[in-house]
Amino acid sequence: MFKILTKHWAFIALIFVTLTPAQSFTKDQIEVDEPGIASAHPLATQAGFKILEQGGNAFDAAVAVSAALSVVEPYSSGIGGGGFFLLYRSRDNFTTFVDAREVAPGKSEPDMYLDSDRNFIPRSSLVGPLASGIPGLPAALVHVAENYGKLPLKQSLQPAIRLAEEGFPVYSRLNRALNVASRSSNLSSKFKEIFL
Image (cartoon, rainbow, N blue to C red; front, side, top):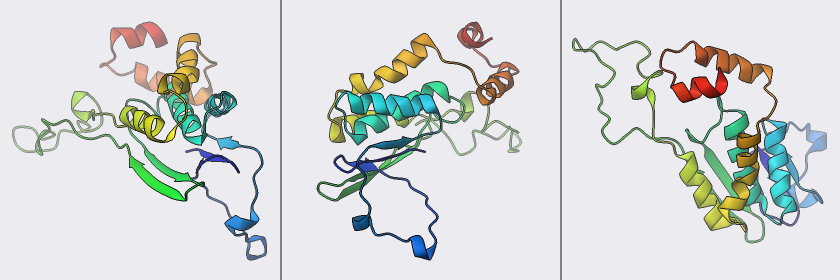
């Protein structure tokens, strides 16, 4: 999850704040002079700031943050999955929700996880080709960039592309996820070549 708040730009907010009654504020009482970006990984946060520095708006930064998370946090975020975007534009009070959740393939059937005796095949809905959905995030990134952003999608994706091409330090949670994945018998040779 991420949030981007600014005084002059549109902002995307999924904000969870605990306030005591004595600390309560209305939105008219809060002024933010500088952009703020929070994400699950500092490199993704930096990607958002880079796009803002290049003249992008909060929606461009959200695309950059999401794409960068796809690279640095592939076990939780990713271009191969889905997500949700709650968008708010302050200049005209516009609010919308983008449902980017992945969907089942068109040829999916209700009994595809059952064996010939109609018993559930353990883990078949979690691991392997039948567990894969059609990603929704790529279409959402295009939609957000084209309908709400100021910069071309290609520019907003550059920080993520750079991270993917140049690499980044592996951290403990990613290392654990890669170790779990390495024990799978379904790994492609390309995955093994890159990560193992």
